Image (cartoon, rainbow over all chains, first blue to last red; front, side):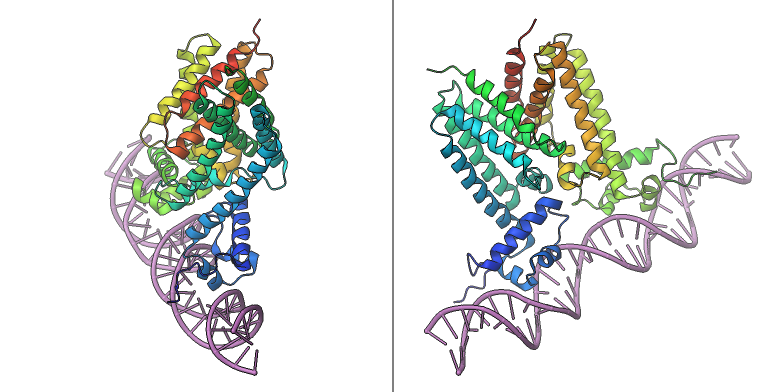
Length: 197
Length: 197
DNA sequence: TCAAGAACAGACAGGTCTGTCTATTTTTCT
DNA sequence: AGAAAAATAGACAGACCTGTCTGTTCTTGA
């Protein structure tokens, strides 16, 4: 009866420590570039503890990404919540949050996009996990675009998403944390030029 | 007098073959994921030949990226040339070219962005090479924005760039080759709403 | 207190990686 | 034809990688 499968405790301190350490290192240096041993040394956890919690490195990567994704989603939800009811204010708030992120210590682009880059195989669980996470952002934009009564909410949502991803890429590539400003302005231009009732 | 440094023949068939094969494999599977031996097997070239042309794997990566960058630049220059003199037509032509690219066999995102993702260290020659290449695209947009007499050509250029990168990311992440359409429309919207003389 | 589960250190296997070396063959140019 | 340059196969070193295994110690809860 004792299930030997590697998820005995859904939430253990060691497990959380491993996930946070792994994410930090992967984000800093890349997924292939960081070995298991580095994560273990940095976190001070034993190898068998890791393999008791996760079947493989890939599973660790997925879990680390999903933990981070949950945190990001919470943060974004709060950001939108605080922006009030006006759709344009919500859009502005989202891009302001990007602005803050780009200015934060250790910003290194989008871990999820980088994960897709390193695991381009569509059947990889890593790849699929990223897709799910990104879809949530698009859905958020679509919700706002609908509230805006845009002529084509789907199109506007997609365009806002393009601007967001583009801003991340530019901030990362050129180490310019102000990339969100141009994106925000373009986003508001596009959103505002939409025919409203 | 014979310089033993690893660049004896600037242009040799084997060298070009190695660069093309390397790029293809890196683009398909990622930089860390593809080993030297795989490139050698695929190209049918001996290991010492590779190391006679390139000091290291990193140098091979840089050379492969730069060869590809030159080809892309040529293609883009021709695309703009064929679009005629109207700035808006040039912008449309660039995004149409993205559209074609996204629909082409083997599209797998932007190799340069993925390279930054795998080599985030700013001092890496790989990282720096990508930055140079991307700057050329931004400069191209800036040139067109200036021709357009945009109020702020730099801002518009940056926004067009964000849309372009965003479209690539979206096409790659969601395997949706039509991502360029929304980007093109947004680009033309932004460019057109610019106050002209 | 004491038993069971969790985490520990560390060795280990088996594979892969980059880069070097040698000795031989092929190509190229004059 | 003959010399110089280029490419070849393949072994090799040394490092690193993931994942397994063992036996010990720590933690925790009844």
